[in-house]
Length: 240
Image (cartoon, rainbow, N blue to C red; front, side, top):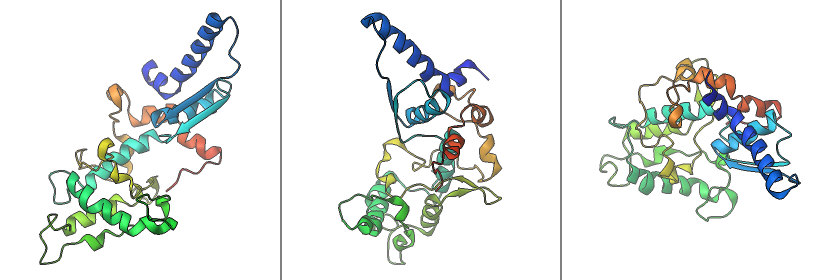
């Protein structure tokens, strides 16, 4: 294990907090009264980890969209991409996601909260059925706002939780409606390796997180970053 991985897992925020407090004390001539942390995604994960490992560092923590199961997050992107893999008949181009898939999801699930406003407030209530997008004999795939059978099959898998070969939950499903934001990818581009088998293999994949890809393997980081397990121990649900 390298110091770089340890820093990324939990130590960096702790050290930065200590240094920040020391600099503040020197500059102002008195210790800070309160210290707060705010982070999102990887920063949210670091906030959860800070609360668990270093509870005295901050008086309050805002952990937005915490990527607490780092291995599962990156593994799920690869699995999702395999369902709509580029170069296969299941591939769904970005314009089809935007013009066909997202509008149908909103059509099926927008009103579940009692208000049609283009927002799915609680994606957990949405049970998107992509079969209604299947092309008939008289339709032209995609250009007519419909999908081929292989694309529909890919979407069915895309919006289901990921289980291994023993039916153990590996990661919760992709939330219907989240595909409307294509800027981050989330496997929708189908460009991640498409040949990954759903099963124990996911635990041995090498993460491609930032510049740490050469050292940040799943077993290594799993030992360092246990924030997902930590949340469960604190009674915070992280399931599908």
